[in-house]
Image 1 (cartoon, helix red, strand yellow):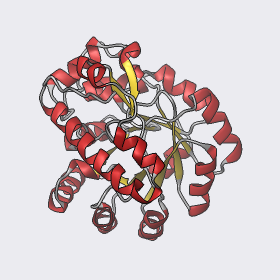
Image 2 (cartoon, rainbow, N blue to C red; image 1 turned 60 degrees about the vertical axis):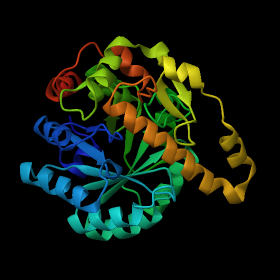
Image 3 (spheres, helix red, strand yellow; image 1 turned 90 degrees about the horizontal axis):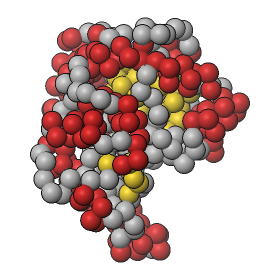
Image 4 (tube, rainbow, N blue to C red; image 1 turned 90 degrees about the vertical axis):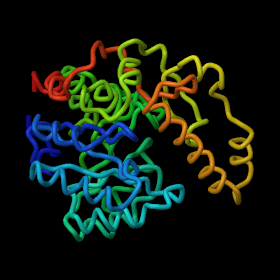
Amino acid sequence: MKTRFNDLLKVDYPIIVAPMFLVSNVAMITAAQDSGISAAIPALNYRTDAELRAAIDAIRAHSTKPFGINLIVNKSNVKYKSQLRTCVEKKVDFIITSLGSPRECIELAKPAGIKVFCDVVDLKYAKIVEELGADAVIAVSSVAGGHAGNLTPEEFLPLLRKELKIPIISAGGIASSTDVKKHLALGADAVSVGTIFIASNEAGVSNEYKQALVDYGKDDIVRTTKMSGSALTVINTPYVKTIGTDATFLEKLMHRNKFLKKYIKMLIAFRGLKAIEKAANQATYKTVWVAGPVIEHVHAIRPLSEIASDLTNEL
């Protein structure tokens, strides 16, 4: 299947394995490459620059097929500038920007021949990043896992298709080749798929986390702002039910005080991401597992290649 996305990345299928905090790793990226699709990995999955460089080198040693790095481009990520420099130096194929302005990233990456895809949740911001020079937008819909948007794919994709000139990558609500074709028909040029790949053999999280995707369903997905200061979709485990999903005192203070906002958000993100990190690697009573409603279609833990096949077998 050929779309504008294929022209951008030269891949067999217009599919990206979405970058997932703590989940994505080298094994997932290389398995995706071998399956004819692309993939990205968050730079924040690596504690040091040396570890990030080693991961990029390992992927390059396996294949010359394209892959990307996801960068959090706001002030909460104190490593952002060094991560960007490393991506430019290493000439990764594409960068996905999230949670902030991609201006600096675009200005540094594009002269190096690196494509920049920007997460967007509304038309206004999509137009801004297009004007800045983004190569594509990633349309994060209301059914995405992690930091979700507010519009359904049915609402968002035709709107973007009408207003934008650059390619559109749809994120959220994809578990099969039927879903891929549906999103392409709605106006997308490609899809970004995350949640279903958490239940892959290669995913870098605990078996309890993977099994949770099998055991829970779409009605068990809720939104919380307690983990990062922005709305995050998680499985409604007993612990999540206990702590609730309503705004905390810090969050309410953050929205009332513009001067303190960025510092409070950094504190919330630090504490929340530490909790998510602990839950991803071991099952405890304080379990917070990030996922989207497509867990409804996850029925087993399988090799990534099999999951990828479900997405490509009718394309």
